[in-house]
Amino acid sequence: MIMFRRNNILTKYISMASLQNVFRRNKGTPKKSKQHEVETIQDDQIHNPYTEIQLLADHSDIVRILLSIDSTRFASAGDDNTIIIWDVKLGRKLFTLSTHTLPITCACLLPPVYKYPDYYEDREERFLTGSSDKKICMWNANTGECMRISQHNSAIKVLSCLEELELFCSGGIELCLWNLEGQLLNTLKLSEEADISHILVITKDHLVVASGSTLEVCIITPAPDMHGGTTYQLERLKKLVPIHKENITCMILVGENFFGTASLDGSIKIWNRHKLTLSKELHPVKEYYKQGYPYSVQHMMFIKEKYLLAAIGCGFCLYDIVSGETIIEREKAHYSRILHLCLVYDSMFLATSSEDGTIRLWGAKPQAGLPQEHSTEKPANQSTLEKLLGTSTIHPASVDSKHHPKEGPSLHLLGECVAHSGAVRMVLDFRDEGMVSCGVADGLVILWKASR
Image (cartoon, rainbow, N blue to C red; front, side, top):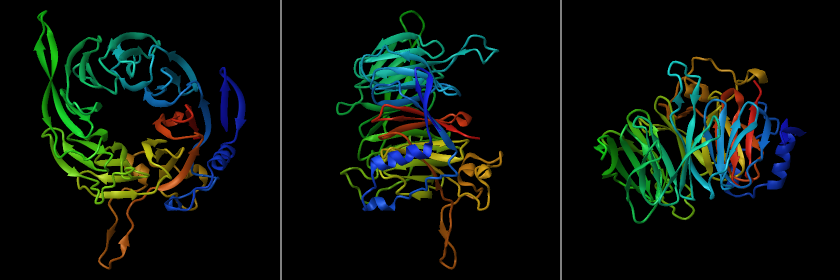
C-alpha cells in the first residue's frame, strides 16, 4: 500500500500495483526503436520486497541531495534552499533548516562528537551544506541548530572532509581549506577554465581535485601560525596523466591502494593512490561519440574485495579491478541514463535509479519452486557480491574447449519501483527500514518500505 500524509495524518491509501499502472499509462508506451531492447517486468513482481511507499512531499522544488546521517535518519536538500532531516522508521520530518538563500549544491557528513568517550550512543552528529549563495553551514543533526556559517568566495560545488586532520575542503572557483571552527586556512587556484567539481581524499593529507577533465593532486602540509600553534596549507603536487577527454563525472576510492575516476567520454581509469600513476583503464571506448555522450559514466560504487560497479549510459557494468575483466555487462537496463547505483535489502538487490523515472531492482535468478516468502533468503555467511549474484563462483563468461560459451554470473530484473514522475536522482538504503529516493522533476522524497 502507498501512504499519503497531510499534516502527519494518514489520509489515503492506494495499492502499489495501481499506482504503477497509472504511471505507465501517463508515460505511454515507448516507441519501437532501440528502446525495445530494454527488458520489461510483469506487474505482479512477486520478488520485489518493497510493498509500501510513503510520499514525503515537504520540498517545493528539485531534490538533488540525500545524505545518510545514521541508521535511522537522513537529510534531503535541493533547489528550494532548505534541508529537511527525516526519521526513516516513522517517515516523519524532524527539522526544517532554512538558512541558505539559494539552491543547495552539496553536503558532507562530519565525524561525530562524543560527549562521553566511553558511551558511544550519546553522540552529536554534524554535517555541512554548501550552496550557490556562497555559504557553508555546519548543522547539528540532533537539534537542527546551525552551528556556524562560513563565507566562501564563490558558489560552492563540492565539500569533502579530512577526518584525521579535523579539516574540510570546499570547491568552486578555488579550492579552500577550513578547520572545523569554520576558519579559512588557505586557498588555491587550480584552473582558469573550469570550476572544481569533485574532491576525493585519497590519504590522510592528499586530495585529488577534478576541474573539467583535469585531475590534480594536492597535499596538505602543517605550518606554524603567528600564535605559536599549527595551521595547514594547500600545495599542488602533480597533475595526473593521461587526462580524460571530457569532464569528470565521478571519483571513488577503490580498496586500500586505488581510486577510480570516470568521465562523460565513458572512460574509467584506476589509479594507484600511493604512486599516483595510472594502473588500468576498465572501459575503453573504441568509438568516441561526443554528441549526447551515450557512454557517459554517471556513478560508480566499490564492492568489498575487488569489484567495481559503474552506471554507463542506460546500463551498468561490474568489473574485477585486479584482472581488469568485465564480469557483467548490461547495456540496456533502462530507457534513459542511470543516475545512481545502490545495494539494498541487505545487498540482495542492486537498485538502479534512472532519468526514465523508475528504480529497477536486479538480483540473482530466483530458484524454481521456491515459495515467494523464501525467494530472497540467503545464507548469512555470504559476501556482499555472493548475496547479490547468488553464487560463490564469480568469473567472466568464457568459452570452453568445444567453443560453447559458459554462462557467467548475471543480474536479473526482479522488480521495478514506479512512483516518481520524472528522473530519480539517487537512492539510499536503510536495510530493514527500507530505501529512500529523491526526484528531480517532482521534488518528492519517497520512502519505500519492505515487508520481511
